[in-house]
Length: 370
Ligand SMILES: [Zn+2]
Ligand SMILES: [Zn+2]
Image 1: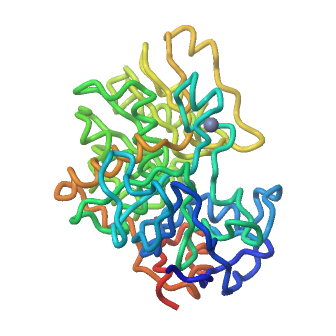
Image 2 (image 1 turned 120 degrees about the vertical axis):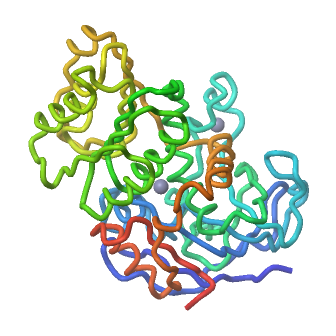
């Protein structure tokens, strides 16, 4: 028997303290569902935006956190296999994807579950309605039937695995949507937050010849260098977007970059990204430019025959590849440097504020701790 309630940090009012409260857990488990004891939750910029009230249409109360790893403590009928066919047993360490419906146009015709019309994201689930607890700032979480699980390799730390649940899989999909990295290619990464830093490592691991990372502040760019950036541009120093484009031009021998990935989500990022591209280059849009973006010069897209491609989060395949990447390059990159020491549920609000203020690259919560 799994517990009937779970202790959780609940968001009842935007930008207000989280309330530590007991939230019900579903008692009857539908086929394919599970209950997991959450062992680690890593926070994402979206959690901070949600907390601040930047998405006011989200119905409260909710439990924030959508990057987590845990241990299965209860399994509904037909929940005994993961997405790769491995057995899931009580005590199995798992991560899981957002739930998808499996029968909409995106799920079936497009075969792109990331675009599922009914994709079940944590913030779409109110904590006062069944199944109550699917967010990460909770001691236990309900895993819906359509959320594919992946059993973790023994040597993969919970914290790394949790971060695959949004940040790392988003990076993996962005590179995949770009068609990968040609060996020796020049790659520009816009942004030195968690996504930009992981992307820097991913570009290096993918065989890029030159990796240039833009972002700030300086401590994050030092991390970028550790993750394989050959050059960094501090956007807090170089505040003129055109000057940043000129610096990339200079660093690439006036040719521009073969691949420019936007993980910055700044109003000028996509204009800069296109201008930084070499002829026949590709610009991948991952960041959200906000309500007032700088116009993207479409004449440059035409004249250089550029490819501009969008990329949204990641599906269970991207999640599987993200875990594989972290395992395969565990010795090459210091992934631990991304993460703050874990705090308990009572520290979750502080951790979210640290994400909002950029004091933490990736704040970490162990919901088992008070
Ligand atoms: Zn996220
Ligand atoms: Zn669907």
